[in-house]
Image 1 (cartoon, helix red, strand yellow):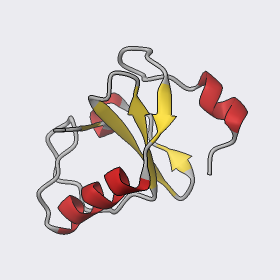
Image 2 (cartoon, rainbow, N blue to C red; image 1 turned 120 degrees about the vertical axis):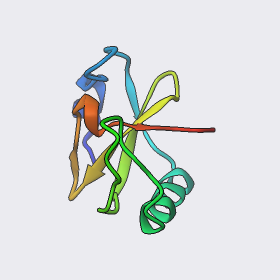
Image 3 (cartoon, rainbow, N blue to C red; image 1 turned 90 degrees about the vertical axis):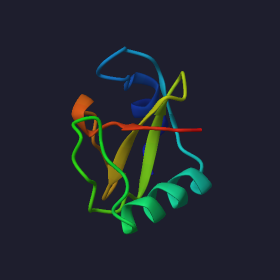
Length: 83
């Protein structure tokens, strides 16, 4: 899990909005879509590797994946949230 100080300073690389840790049901839903090969990142690539967690942008539109406790804060790796 990310430490609190880190979470307070990381921001969306695109909009500079604050990020918060995704709830487990959101992560589970995305992992199901990844399993079905139906989820794409902002670059348009199908995501094949499950995520351990995610950081959701303040406006709730984008989630950045966390894999092996490392947040992937690259604009093209962001995943658009539908709901």
